[in-house]
Length: 129
Image (cartoon, rainbow, N blue to C red; front, side, top):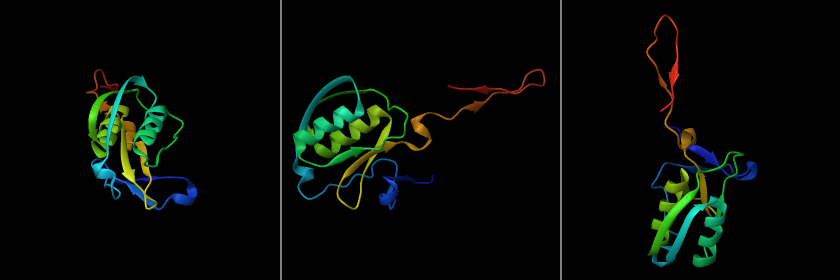
């Protein structure tokens, strides 16, 4: 699997790998958070997470929306919260060299790739699961 490059053009030195790439910054592992959201925008949930925990986080804007976030987290570690939020949104989370947690799309957009269908009658087709 090829890692995805994340960040702005000036920051494209950081690599995001599939979960679990998140490593805690000093003190982050001890922090706990509580979130209860349904059908929420990833950017809004990450902003809530920042306010509760004091960590810096961002969401990569790809021009395509992430899946809505549905999570109920009661007093869980910051790292578990970030991983759970990322999974709910069809994203991944990593920490860049500056210590900022970055939520980015999963490789392939987080979707199952199309499966080629068996041709019938000489035609071809693609079945999307």
